[in-house]
Image (cartoon, rainbow, N blue to C red; front, side):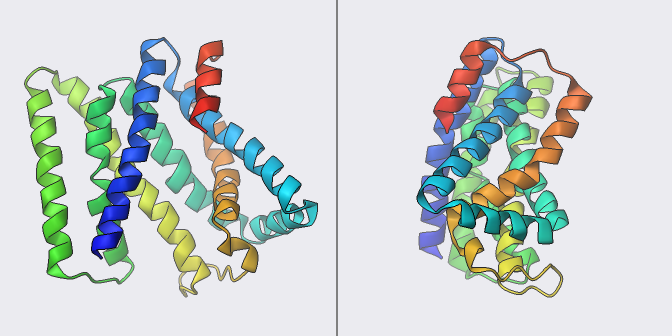
Length: 235
């Protein structure tokens, strides 16, 4: 369990650089929706090319069949774990400094434990002890920032990041549960889904309807050239 928490902290550190880049693009005038949606558009293109080149078109066709067989599940998991998660993170970047979002994101360690409990898992007390240390650290950082920021900045910056911290583990755990035979979910028992790159591509495909609906509703201005290149750099 300690290794799981350590892995969560390490993952949070890697994500933190992304949050700072999102904040930079926001300050340059790029719309948060393009920062979010273009990342997954490029991810789909890169992973599709990578899998086709190194695994062959047969593998790609197999992934398409896996997706279409349970497309409702992949749309649900992808919309929550990728779409809702990253759109909220990029929205937060428009209202709070990147370091605040990066700090708040560490709550995903606690959120992951809560999500796993929702699926019937249990944890030793020391896991919650380490989680409490993380929670206190995030709370102190946000309280210090509250002294120099407005209520609007806290609500529009910190709250979406907090919700995103739950969305990411929910989407990923849904896939894990489906692959491992949870009777409440479709049985996705296919060897192709064991590959982590394949899972990311399937979830990315599933997030596409979410991005299209969000773009249609928000109607953002066209992305800046620098924003497009920065988004490619994130991947």
